[in-house]
Length: 311
Image (cartoon, rainbow, N blue to C red; front, top):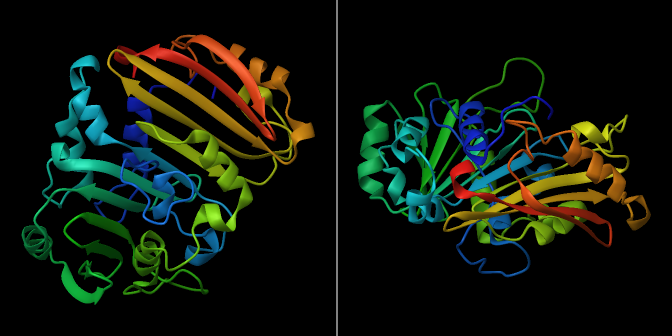
């Protein structure tokens, strides 16, 4: 958006700050862990069909490969990974032990978090119990814990932690706590037991196939905008949008993908307007060099590169 501070680090902090299952906070996107079922970007294995977890046809996801950021830490100026640990408190997991963070939820408030990490399950259960979480059930290899007010759920299997809401908001009136359907659905999506977003939605499939892997990935499907404003990144007949950044030494490869309703809707001129209007200091394309444009069927794609210090 115009006049808005923009960096991948800013995206990370905003994602964490706006997510939440109680004090636990989320981020999201691509994973370096292979998809055991194949078929598309590996991070998509965490993302259930929207119909499985809510009453909206769309949600947003963000992904951060913290293992990759750690291996390139010397090239990223003033990055303090330890500051991230406060966002997933009360879990006591060092950021260096987290390989991937995947967060997703409503377009203006992420609410579900998957942390892939090396940790001791029993130790983390004890930590949660000290914070008044109680064991609720076992489900497909995960231990599900509920907060004392039963509004937040945490599922642990020793390799991943899932945090999400445990309230049933499908009916009228005050939501009731103790509902583990959502966290169980996320577990089922990871195991391939329910439809995933990219299986159920051709627009998400097109988006994730174009984004591929990366260090930081964000994306969403959306209803076509009522009014197209290319300068703000809203395009006529746009049905999905996302970006990916791949850090490699002192360079970051950047990609932005816009998915349109049909191939005839793709407009490179609108993409150029978007970049031109958002290239001032602290805007999205401020530090991007070697920008190029291309189309692939119903996708418009912008690519470029930045210095890792601007990551």
